Length: 360
Image 1: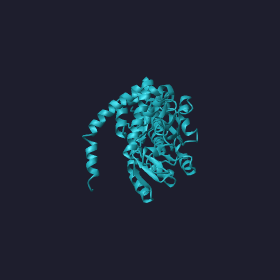
Image 2 (image 1 turned 135 degrees about the vertical axis):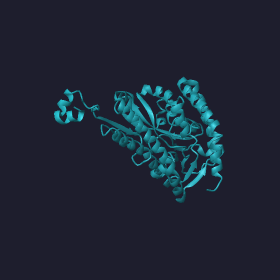
Image 3 (image 1 turned 90 degrees about the vertical axis):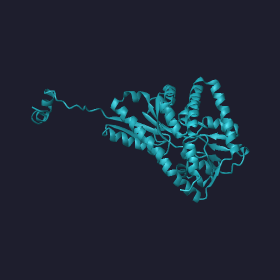
């Protein structure tokens, strides 16, 4: 008698008695919560978390679900690391450099000034030592990371006044991501302010901020920053490729079945790829719109970038001299970057340089 006949005539009891039990066993439903450091209005960044949730649910047939919560709903935007450390949540979505107050090493997982581009960052983490070194560091905070998407090279921010010389930076109250960038800018006289994206517009409008950097044209226009700070500078030398990330609680991840671990990892990859593609597609359109609305788009004077580079190198030297852990990751990143720059001289750079100079 074949299996279908057994099932038809004997029912489930007969199936079990005949040793023909179905191969797939039901798994207990898994319900996770993800707290984001970003507002729901940012369909690029927060949208990456929403896509993760949809993908996990679809791949698991509804057996694994992740509810997604914007900044302020479960906890403040910058409360997610403490929540992971105390096992309050299973996942978070954030920018690691928001937490350099705990340790400057956090910045390497997102972006550091004059650091890696988006592609270089992905390559360092996947095929260099990046993820291995960073996840070993994050063990003490009870989480591991995976990209939620990279913004690409960011803009240099919005200013209520022109920046013509280094002296124009002195006393400037500026919202920035923090970390090494904040320390370097402090050397140039800038007063760094680390605040959630949702608070930037009001602070600029009230004059409690003089400038703010966030991401790029698409996100910045959604926050309305151009309405209160007309001067838009480029490039954002402090974020050559900012990696937004999913932080996954180590204990909760370990408790997942192998199938659900694979589903989660695959879904995070889907979300990361989607976010980066979305930025590349939407930023040019948003930039043209901003310029049409009289945004004053201006390149930083080279002297300002040079001063920023010098200040950053001083900050790196200070940290590497007192923190072996910082030095180990910094040296590894720079060694990887040097090889990337070498290859870029014969690949992306000359190609882009040519294409930028021809009419298509």
